[in-house]
Length: 446
Ligand code: PHE
Ligand code: NA
Image 1 (tube, rainbow, N blue to C red):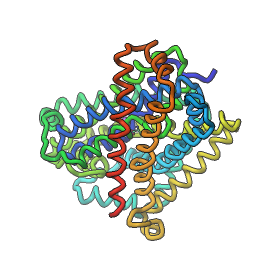
Image 2 (spheres, protein in one colour):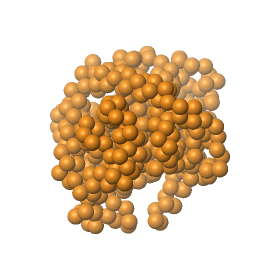
Image 3 (cartoon, helix red, strand yellow):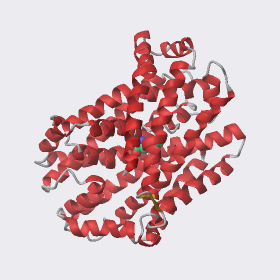
């Protein structure tokens, strides 16, 4: 049987969750929104909204033991075949994977450049980053191809020999590198500054934008709304306590985001750099800081970018898996054929994404002021993921037998826990996400 073991599931789901979202995105948005207060809001979003949706996907998957479409039909009260349209979620994962693979390609490039001369000023570092994105088409295609090939190679081997195994290898290595970096950060004087930046609330920068950013980040970081958690849970034996496993994954993901934040802010403050550099934080600010640390700087730079690639690869394989399971289980396709189809899709879209930022192609691949790369990010994280999360919650709250859910939950946890979760997904979560969705769509104007 192609099933996860309990620990295999936790590792794979944690591998999916822990990714660029934790080490690249979380620190830079925390920096942009002023630190402490944002972290607090983010933690609340994880506990009350992220974890609820995580459990929602997990309970559907584990109970149905099937692909997304079949799982929705099977779980519904009516067994209405139209629930198959929930299968649209697989598209979001493939689109995210398209640009995620390109970003992983940049990181691969940074592993190699970490061995050479590191940029000594922000101007030089900024130019290097912009030249990579704007001019180096061949380089980006090569790196994207290496990443895409690696992802395809892993998923072709299946759940146990492919996904479980790669997580079993990469997750401990990632933990070792991060602990090493954390220990180094601890020796810096700036560590206490990083702690107070991240944990003493600065409410001045908390507005509706910050709240929405925290909510969006909670989804992205826990891999919700693309069917990944549902699909992974479908390979989790029914007897395993999915609630405990889910909570563990959320804790690991949160811990790694916080640790990554502490490491990066210690480094930044040590060099007297700003915390508000946005997406360029790890690609522009960090290399300049590393350049001041001599040989050790090269070593830390290489380790840091390797950690990012490891974290990202285990997330990348989890983005394609919902689509693969959908094609193999629902349409009886071979895994090879499904992988070729999905692989071609995300590979080609990745190339479109990277071309859309380069000189020659930028103009044709930009629509309404956003290039293809930004569109892929925007459509998935601001539209498809929240929509899928709302659908999942409304489905469970209104179209599934409550007694069935209660029975499943109470074999593992108390009835009180079940009731809290049930009310969250029935009322609070869909309403909160609807607000997020409407607000984000307002951004469409510019
Ligand atoms: N959770 C991953 C991260 O933090 C991203 C991801 C999104 C993975 C959706 C799978 C599905 O980087
Ligand atoms: Na994450």
